[in-house]
Length: 331
Figure 1 (cartoon, rainbow, N blue to C red):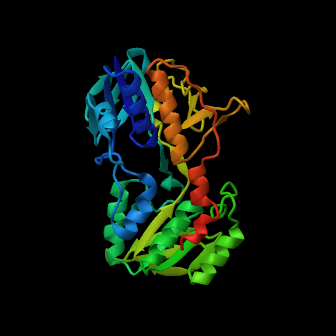
Figure 2: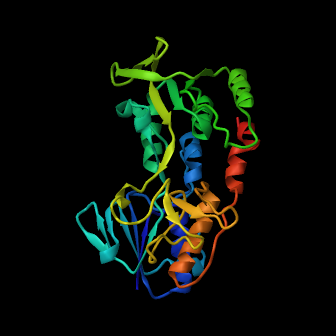
């Protein structure tokens, strides 16, 4: 028996442990395009502040045993899924045959909606954080372009690091209504109280690299200004491009039932890339958040190992902690 897990965030890691728990003899292969082992992604912002990113929590003897007989294919990505062949093709030219497949690739930032891709930094992976850290050390000013929690977090981090921060939010981006408990007015008041330069309903139309150390940025109202680093906080989209043409049903994510199973019985999906059928509402919903991704990974792993577990999407308490009233208290 061979289980292949694509992606090794909260969902992928949780699935790995459940598969090994209930199927101790099977072969498991984890495929991830990141070069680093599992780390706590929600702490990437804190990593920019103190350069200390927590790794996988300490493993006890039982957990260490569960991680044996696992092959990790690091730094490669899946380019094609062929369900009829029970095979995935990888970017290094190799392929893997599987009995069960889990898609747990999460999301990516859709920077194309902003343009200026050549000049934008994002914060999605540890490698992103390391690149951004190097650039920010030499910069006196940081431009945050986008909205929502990610933009606010970037503004907080670079304000803490004593950078001059300007936050430009395009129309519809500043503070999405789905972020609970904190209003746009409260965020505006917080920014004003800290002396941060906040521009709402403005777009960047052009940026010129002046000397490799500073950008001249042009705004849609004719204003120009300079910034040492441009950090983007665009919308997130599922990382599922490799599924196009595979026959796996996708919508705003990989469509799965309450068992996290796709329309192809031996292919599962979990985490932020999955669109899960909700038994209560009768709708398929994407349920973003670290804890919910881990729970989905657990259910998918159990079912890949022969169980019949189900999941009912709920609001993620971890997300509520990040985006609730505690959000502004961290400044």
